[in-house]
Length: 373
Image 1 (cartoon, one colour):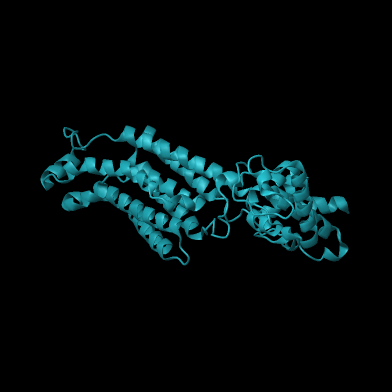
Image 2 (image 1 turned 180 degrees about the horizontal axis):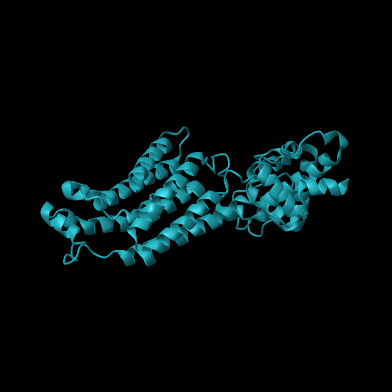
């Protein structure tokens, strides 16, 4: 019964994801992946329930779909974190190996029905030519995609702290839990080799990934997808610099900002924050702030990293914490909750505020207020 429920959930989530408003490429990949998982689970159920022996054509649902899950996990993560990588068709290469595995299964699938049924009933014994052992290849495929997906998530984490002042909707922590779940699943495939465990866990993860996949919004819109991964880290050579008054473009073409130019830009940044308090904008990004300063985002990132000694995320949220300290110390603000004041300072969630406040002060907001009193 659990597998029938899993199949229903898979296709139900696929419909929700593929029809949700504002769906993007990541949603399409996830929706297709949900359908593949549903087919895979139903294929397994048809085998253990014996349905496949009454309807041999259902054997087509038992094709080696396991080789598809690694590429789908990777491509879904790639679509969320680096949508620009889909401008070329190179991503299709990830399906070459699964396609080869499918082709290798075709000689068996085109056997007469009674022969296929006999092979199934004997679990492939005596018919190894038609039922190859894919365990080693599947293990290699699984480990490979687990590793490169982890690299994607690691680079994404580095990237967003240099571009965004709020991370609650884009940190993809839930996807990391999915990654760990997939890691456990592959460990079971490699070491335990229990289909019952594998498909039971898959049913649980269906609900998890479907729920968070539906909630997930686009991370890099056209507005924010302006700088590359190297630029976001504050490194690299910038050729297309937005001209800043009083600073020669050729000076920065190879060596980056000079010390004097960096100090001048830092002063402009500090003055802009004092005058306009841009840090109170919850969705402030490095690109938007750089635009206000008429400078390339890479140079602004360099100044924040080198002079302030922190990344963009920490810089902006430190300013928000300092603003909160000022507001909470005023008697007229004691009638407001901490969260209300935190929102006024630019935070967009209670968890983000509490986490960063504790990080910078080693105190909770309540403890801090008691101390200043």
